[in-house]
Length: 289
Image (cartoon, rainbow, N blue to C red; front, side, top):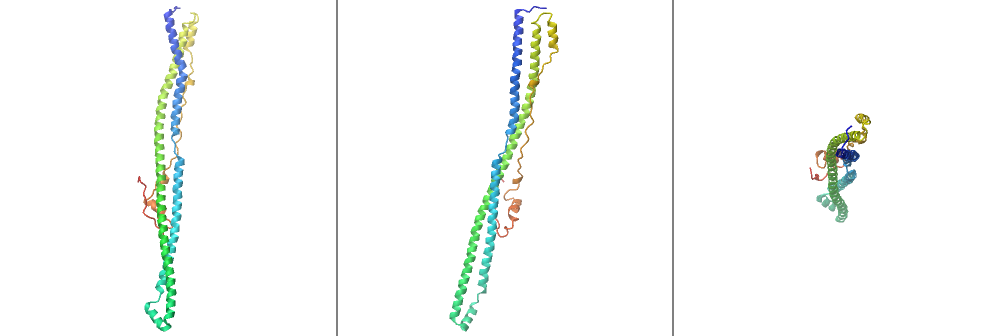
């Protein structure tokens, strides 16, 4: 056997130290790569939808719809009341006798009786007229109130539409970007995973072969053979790659039909039983439409 010089032994010792560092660094770099893979998965999961804000906006729109509909139903009743009272006034007014008939009655029954009668009729007519005018005014004022509630409703729905569509769009973009990062991370880590196992295997075998120079001549063939068949386990350095988390459901169907479109006007206004007597005001369209 060849006796190694001091310098040769120093070289081998230096190599052994380098290989030792490679072996010892393998678990550290493995943990770092696993962290990157885990983080990529978590970034996908962190893409979220603000359901609380969406639900709040949806509830506000629903509440506004109910308030507006109730107002229109009341307006319908006020319209019917107005028609009845004004029809009654017009009916009473149309049945009063003509001046010629009154003059003839005065000649027959005397002026005093006709004056009393005329005052009673006038009083009744004035009451009917006042009732008609009050009903018209109340109906008009209630209509203005309903029109404001209609505008509030349309604005509330547009707000809900904006929040829902923006949330879904933001979520889709976030998830798409995160999935791209996850895919790229997996690809890069698969390369480093394989390289780490190769380096660890090579460093371990090199240290084994260096050991051949450190034993007696009789032992060297045995150690060499052991090194040749050495099985080096690298399963500890396997990376756990994750499937991406399932996508959240972000459905924009509820806002596909929005204020002022023909379908909206028909579904929310014109098809309602109150519409003929309480038609809506001019619709307020969403700003982005």
